[in-house]
Image (cartoon, rainbow, N blue to C red; front, top):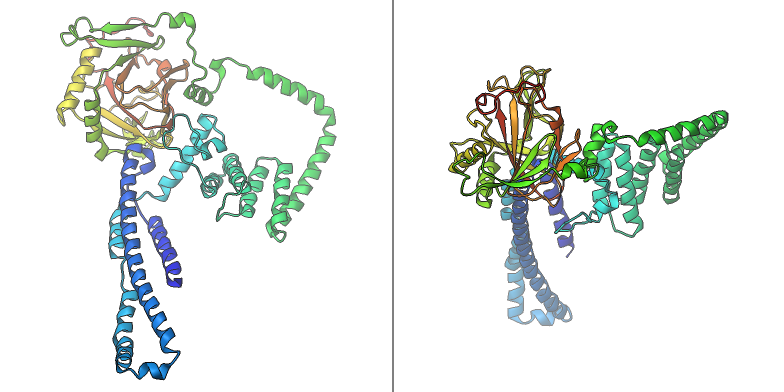
Length: 567
């Protein structure tokens, strides 16, 4: 039994070492669609591991039966050794056991039952996530926490809106999040997650992480945020658990010295107290400013939560639903599409039931093997780079504003793929449908881009069109600026994932089978800056979209130029 207890931890260590040594070429965390494959990989590994366990248990059962048989035999034999061996059969069997059977037992114990499991693990390891994936997923959780104003306990207990598969975080999970934040000098989130880890330890959760380690991180992160008195309290609690902790001893002296300095400074600044109160009051008054003066990041996060939407009842009353046939287009005379006004300025419309489930599945089937992390065009080098502001799959490509070339975008965490009309009749049919509804030429439009958003997948505020200070935007395409955007929603999203327009306070929520459309340029060709938009992080669910960027060339007779700059 001692051998059994030693063997299993060794295999756990082997599995962990394999996990840590993997090198994957996919940024799994940026696409839920591709992450689903990992579940099947893990399921296969568990099956293989169970086969190994059964083989080991069978081997141990055989060893146990042998040991039990000999235990009984030797107990009897040693009571009267000479009398026992006086029987010639017993003497023969003793020689046979020691010469042959114990050798067979040795071979059984030394037999290797790991071949199948190790072979499978070696094959599957090429598909494993990397350290970048783990860190990316952790930072996505922190981003969701900020965007949707979630406290650490809500996330740790899995109490997110609309969840079907509730999952709780362990002390180790919380500690890992805190460490990742700490490595980025993000002491605010370090405090939140180390405090959550400590809370769960205080509640009696068993863990390999001890309170001393958590308190060490917690007190330092609080100190870095300027709260010396609270940092001192946690350090003193640490010393109660480990009186010989050298760093904590030094920190106590330092914190006490800093508090004394702070107290002296406060006494010297007594005369400024009233003025400070007036400043505080003034700041509070200023905080009640109009939506237009709120920083864009704040507006973006508010809209993602469904707050700050600037649609008055009077304007709302001017938004309608209708059956639309685009001036009696032959395709829609008998079966017009349903069109719904989403916003008035800029004018955004939604088309309902505009793409079927079968078409969606075909698009996803074509796109999934090609999903790559989103890219953008670097403004200086023109080289493709990963975009930090978008989390979806191709880790999306966006055009550099100066060179017009594509580069991977870090602000866009997603993965995407491009599908051409000649790849499948479904893509050709969809392109024709967009052209029939919008009346715009598709020959000069970009290919259909399919995007899948990953953990906390988002695309921060951006313009789809090239601005005046980006003269080379889309230069390589030779089709002019992006005149309009067509966006299909190919999945429902349980929570989050809205498309928001921070400058005008608009929010459009995903609904499977629908598409939204808006013009990025006025009829004069000038850019409509109110179309600056963003994709909110996906809180719960899986977001699939596909979009068509329509360009100026070929629209000369389909959308005549306006005489007014903002017409």
